[in-house]
Image 1 (cartoon, rainbow, N blue to C red):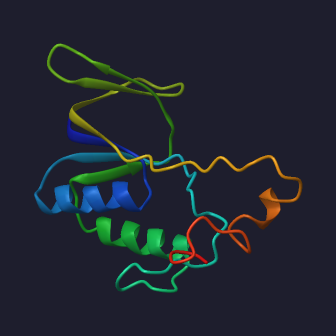
Image 2 (image 1 turned 180 degrees about the vertical axis):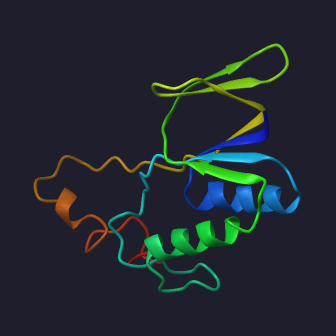
Length: 135
């Protein structure tokens, strides 16, 4: 039984896990490894990390979380969340469900690109969502 199950292992989910871990809460973070900024070379306008590669930021966050014994992560995808009589059941694809008192969904945003030929390979390198963050 976890105090909180976090669905999403990007910046928002890891930040929430850090706060809860510092509060000595039992936390499980599910991270399916898909991130909005995967193709970006660096991120900007994030204090203390301006110009850092998104993968480096996540690596740094995971290493900081490792100090908290009450925080665990799983590289798995959540397939279903159900409210039971006293807790949530969070199902993983092909595994038994885990139980949590609360569930925090931090899955972020998915960009749906217009169907313009040649656009997808340029996304995150010379085509950007935000000129301030990754442009």
